[in-house]
Length: 196
Image (cartoon, rainbow, N blue to C red; front, side):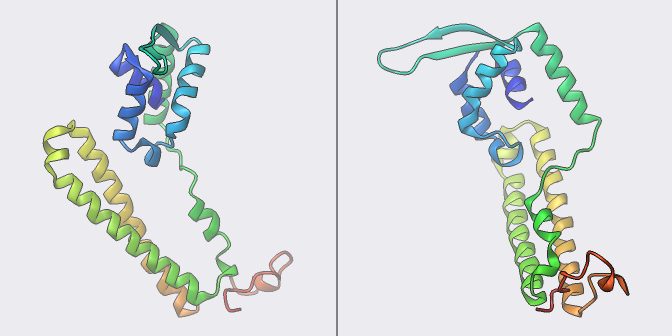
């Protein structure tokens, strides 16, 4: 959706300009758009009939620069993808959640320390985002909704920071990871309850 939307917004546009714009947005961090995949995605979208090649220019020994624009089919696809994201809630994959599901494999002291470290890293990120949000760069050089996205990220990071601190305290208190009696139930015998 990001690449299709940017071509739609900037058209006619070179692939290089799409890549540069996405990198300026740090889309590789929050939208999972990797810089190395952008040209491949442009070709794929063209093959699927969602984009059309307007021109191909070559100057000297430089690589050819292809200019793209969105087709009618691409417009329909963008509108569908856009609205699907606005009207649904989808949790992004989070490697931390996968690791947290094996909490009992960690010694309690290490798990609590890791959560407190995560909280500290999140706090540092919050301070950086706050500085960006208060900067001239966001206030006067970006559309208003960019600041609103920063506010969303701030709220999420603040909530996760508080959660990390709360769970670290519970782990340190020695609370059991399993309900009473469950540690003897089939399938749970390998869980150590973090006490190693």
